[in-house]
Length: 135
Image (cartoon, rainbow, N blue to C red; front, side, top):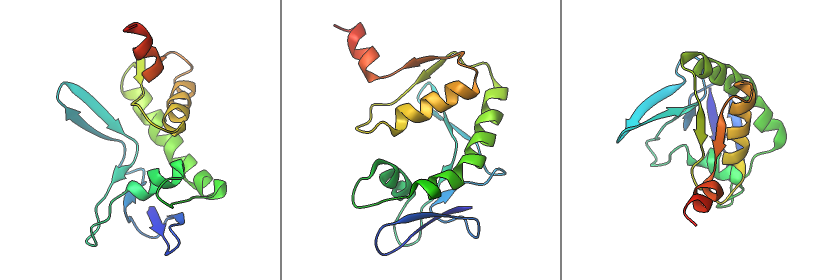
């Protein structure tokens, strides 16, 4: 399961192939270490031979660089996102969700979805909270 991008930069979900982003349950979640931080990924970003990568999905969600995705298409990702997040939440007892700075609310919305799945037991910290601590 992945995404397709047409000539008009419209992103759609596909269950036929794992192009650009692997959204399948058997390949996700992913974990990797970045310095001392463990990063959990719900979907695995893939690179294509044409030099593209999984960014079109993020660009479409943010409405950036001419990419778009319909609400109906976004809904097609939800069953797998929810199952993968449930899997992550059962791996460990998370206390804090730290969102990375972003020009769009998609990151904050995703953090809130994670917290709902975790029955609101996490502290959500965003860039405004961090800035306030240093003032």
